[in-house]
Image (cartoon, rainbow, N blue to C red; front, side, top):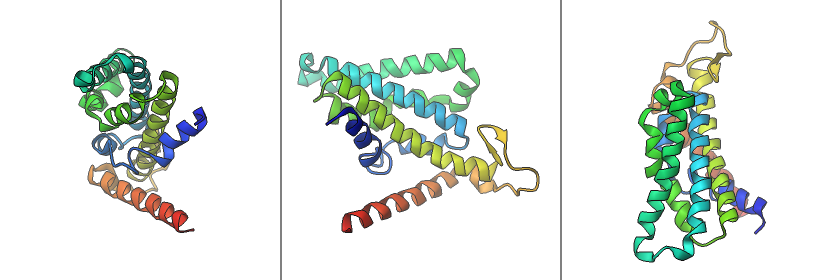
Length: 199
C-alpha cells in the first residue's frame, strides 16, 4: 500500500473509535471543549506515530516473550514526553485534561496499532499508520466536542459564538451527553457503511 492508502485505512476504514470501539474513555471524558479535544488528539497522534516508528524499528530484535512489555515501555516513554510538554508549555490545558494525558499509556488504540501494524511493517509505514490512527481519533473527538461546546456553552475553542439569546443546553455540558453524541455518530457511520456494502 502507498503511504496515502495506509493513512486512509488507519484514519477512516479501520478507525479505532467507530470501527473498533477503542479509546472510548478519553473520547467521553475530554470532549466538553474543542480545545481539550484537539490537544488530547494531538497528544495521542504524536504518541501513536513515534511509538509505531520506534516499535517497528526494533521489531526484529525484540524477543516474543517480552514484546508486550517492550511495547508498553516505549508507549509510556512517548506519553510521558507529551505529558511533560503540556505541563511545561500549556499548563492550563494540562490541568483541565488532568490524568487523562497519562492514561494515553493504557489507551487500547496504541497497543492495538503496535500489535496490528508496527510489529509487522517498516518504521516509516508504521509512523504513517500512527498518524492516520491518531487523526481518526482526533476527528471523532472534535465532532463530539463541536456539538457539545456550541450547544452547551455557545462557544467554539473558548470563544463565544452564540450570544445571550441562545439558550444553553445544560445537558451538553454534562458527561452523559458524550455518550449520546458518540452513539449518534456510531449509528450514522455504521448505517452509511452498511448501505455502501449492500450497494
